[in-house]
Length: 240
Length: 240
DNA sequence: GGTACGCTGTGGTCTGACCACAGTGGCTGC
DNA sequence: GCAGCCACTGTGGTCAGACCACAGCGTACC
Image (cartoon, rainbow over all chains, first blue to last red; front, side, top):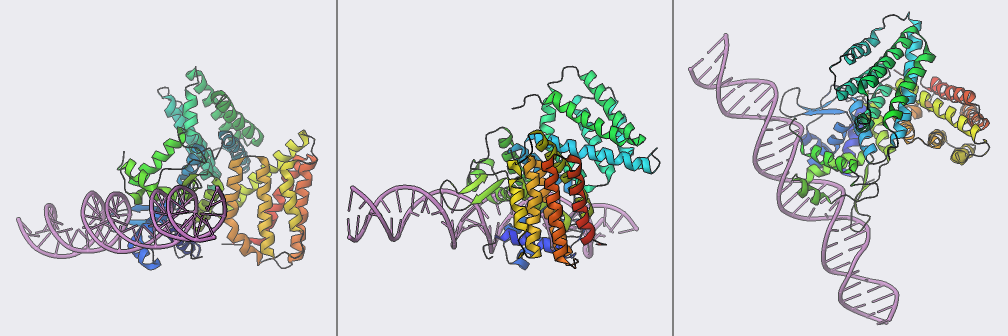
């Protein structure tokens, strides 16, 4: 009980305020000095707790004065998830193979669900896929560096997750992606014939979206699965 | 780049050390004072970074002297995932419905995979399911408080994830569980006939494990899906 | 009326100090 | 010679105070 470290009490205090609804996204937290005085802890302890909230994607801090200054609740989980995954991968907490397998699982499910939903509401031009379409076109640009292509590729997969409307899945996929980003870039060097490879990847992307639009859930699942596992099979060969 | 904040410097330094393999799980970080001097930042900034690493489940800190003291790399992602999910749910970053849907997705996949794997290696007594079996037996105890039952229930589901051997999924499921734990406990109050309900839940659990042992992937998927969605349908009725 | 200046409060950082704690090793008593 | 005790040392944990840069606001000045 009294063993609780000071920054924990700060964290728990803020968490309980959130649960009670006394703090909501957009709200501004009390200043560090005020929190310090209210909770009877040092300002440095308050800062340690705030730092955690910041990395977890819960708050944004801004120095200065005025309504935009201070610590403001934002609740954007993707950033926190990414930091967590990246560091855990770096510390061997998460094997890369497990990340890829999880990604396979989530993306197949997302693609399948999108296809089913799309076929229900008539298909055609779901606005959710607009972002994906835009990225698809951007990736067709011939003057693209491989690393730039990869960034767009990542955005494309993320756009699919966002289209699903499930924020947990979206944030998780953003995290997974971030965790293996280093390996993906590294794997680029193993690709001999980039023009051919990128053309194939572009075709696979279109295939996935087409299957979704056609409402063919099975094909959507299979295609995205093969797309992802194919890329990793090609680039991650015997990586320690 | 933007004006780097001191604690970011520390975080990036440690992350790069991890990536380069100069730091591995089990290793001990330099002392706070040493890091502070090496990186040219204040000790408070070092502490803010360490606090982040601690919450993310990357290090464990221990005061005192000797080999067990200091900050030691542990890489246990479940804790960090749980903290992230809990806080994001509290801050409305993650809708509960999205968490449940994600859980449905992951657990169905895990159960199906376990069933397929089990049928391959002959089924019978996979050692991976031993923990699940133990929890199943523990849940049969009639003198169990609902909250205790719920805790065992959570462990059971986690044991299935662990049996899959995918650490990312295990950590994610631990986090998801933690995120909705408050709601699950709250939902307990809505249950009128606990003996009947718990008996049904126990039966469903056994049904899932039986299907896995029988190598019936389709049944395993369906049963765990119905089990989870059934429980939430019962307890989460019109929760804002 | 408009502009420039200073005031004020915010986070960001550093420093130095003190505490509690856990090993370590020497000292003491037998 | 040995066992047990205790001060020492280094660690994280915490606090208080100081200073800085910055953003907004109001006022005084042009």
